[in-house]
Image (cartoon, rainbow, N blue to C red):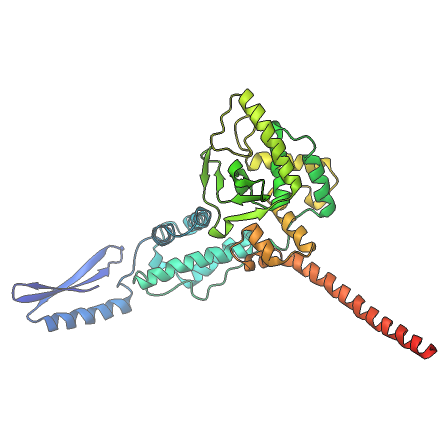
Length: 391
């Protein structure tokens, strides 16, 4: 932006511009009056803008994006959301390292979206695009760039959305898995307790890992979820995915019975092994650790091989137990609103998006039931008419 400085009885006007090598320079001229200085500065600002030299930042896009999200997003969003910004930054570094934000064209950006869409689902590509667009719009407001090169660009994806290939156990499979993991679990197989907890609650792995004994209400038959376990710093906790993830959910007697068994085993076993549990962690095992993703998934795969399940769910991940819980409740006619609250989703739209295919299945079932009911109503009517005629 041009500046006017009084120097003695005269006025100096300075207008910034960028040289071809990207260095920032200034044009300067001194005038007898402030009015003349302002006129010259304004005229040169317009010329520079038309030439594409005014305010064009030579800061690389990845660097600007990082500075933007650390300033405007990090203080406001949850750690889980920050991982998405870090993920986007990694992708930008792969494609635009060293490229000034002011030099990127609309065509270059669209080609970038096409490229990242080749091996990502559309929802992920859309999210990446949305984050970059926010940063670019901020750069536009700061006069770092002249044009929004993201405007009108379309995110693409080559794979189906996660709701289309969502994997979950059916009712019979869930019963067989539960029967297997609840048959004599011990401190050495705490992962079995965690699998049962996921099936009964639909909680996320980090939420389950973060449960402490004071989160259990034996009187009200509830568990409180208000933190997650941090495997990068054993014995420490992190925030939940979002504030909606803070919740208290009802649990069944079978799960509480399992918890009581686990508590008894801990009180005896941990003392004998001289393992301290100052945080009161529910799922501290005989090695003094809380099993993470690798441990629980390894055990789950063993169980799935041991019991009878469909081929397409033999590689089900631990997160698939969360989908199993939600899908089971939907098929049992539990309201989507309640399920959304129970799962700790940000809003009901998230639940509808993830489980759209399940809802479509239920809609088809209800449609068939409706047709059967309407046919029965017609048949009942004809039967009643025949009775009247014979009286």
